[in-house]
Image (cartoon, helix red, strand yellow):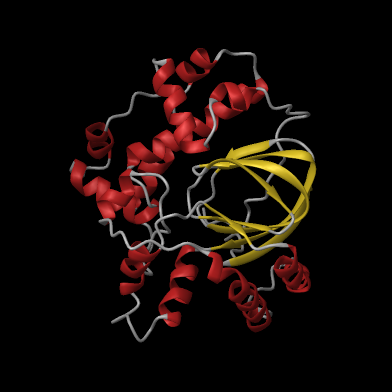
Length: 309
C-alpha cells in the first residue's frame, strides 16, 4: 500500500503558467516571494507576498507568474480538517458527524484569497520551513505532535481572515454547485459504486454520460448514485465530470493548436458557448484568455503522491 499522510507541506518556485488543476484535499497556499495572477472560482486575482490562498477539495485553480512566484503549500485531508473543526467547536456539536453540518453553515467559499500582509506572513515562514522539512521522508507518525503544533500555529494566524457565511445549503445543493466544501466520508471506506463511477468518468471524459447510464452501470437508482458519489467526492457525478472536462480542455489549449470550439468538442461539449461557460465558471477566466498565457515546456509537474487512490 502506498504511504499516505493527512498533512503534507511543500515549497516550490514556479516560473511558467500552471493549471488549472484540482485536488481531493484542502490546500493552504502561502506566497513567499514574487507574484502571479491567480485564476479560480473567485475569478482572476493578483497575488503577491503577504497573500494566502485557501482552496477546498476539488476546486480548480491555476496561476500565471509575473516572472516567478515562490509558495509553500500545505495539503490537508478533508476528513482531517473536519476533525480539527469538531474539536475546535466541540461545545457546540453533538458528535463528530455534526462537524460536516457545521462546516456547511460556516464555510461556503472554499476558494478564498486572504490578504494577510507581509508582516503576518513573515511570522509564518519559520513554521512553514520546519513543516516542509518534517513532511519529507514519510515519517508522519513519528513527527505527528510537532507537525500538529506547527500547523496549529499557522492556522492561528490565518483563521481570522477566512470568510464565513450565514447562508445554509443542503448537501444536495452543495453537491450541484461549485465551489464545494470538503466532503465527509464518516470514517467509512468509499463505496465501490462511487469508485467505479469515478474510474469510468476519468477514463472517458468526452463520452456523453448521463446520470441514469452511470446509475445503471453500478445497479443504483439515479438518486442513490447522486448521494453515494457526493458523499465520496463532494460533487454529483455530472458536476464532477464538468470539472474533469475543464481540466482536460485546459491541457488541450496549452499543448495543441486546437480552437476553443474543437477543444470543447474533444472533451464532450458540442457547443462553444457551453464549453466556454463551464470553463469560466470553474477556472475564473475565459478559454481565450487562458490560451494567451505562455506555457513554456508544458505545465509544472505536481506531486500528488500523498493523495489517496
